[in-house]
Length: 247
Image (cartoon, rainbow, N blue to C red):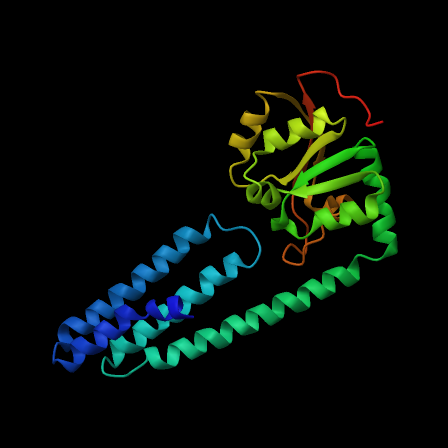
């Protein structure tokens, strides 16, 4: 919360200017500050398409901009002292909402949905598959591990923690006789670069182009994508020695 409070430095500056009888400067400064906050949030929001981030990019700048506009009307008012608790309450409310949505999504993934996803996934991947995927679309890795009965999964965040590229991880899997796959949304940041790097060592084949309504049939069931999300499943065939089953 300390970093969030620092966001209110400019409104506080406006109030100090007003206290020093610089109201003709303080008011335009507050309006310009609010306009810049809103414009910056709008520009950033276009690239934020995942999880709770879009909501945060509206919520936080919105509270700050509103505080600045109140200060423009009444520069001497200590609005930043009220805005910070309001922002904290809004963030708690957002967190509770996300948690409730997550519980609802898990409840919607019942046995019929699981069985359909298992059958669909079994047709899409080979036995011995290891699917590299992302946590940004929910928790598909756990679903694949637990329910698919044909594949295991790793997250991109696991590879980042191990300081390992997708290509290096996929090659190790192929050398071990496993079948590496990549399951990512079409909006995945760095998607083109990732695929270009993989194509240096792998034959990258599109195993499934998964439209948003069919995402749950591939174990992608994220509460923050109630209508699903467009996914792609790639088979990574290593261009080194042939893959052999693990004895």
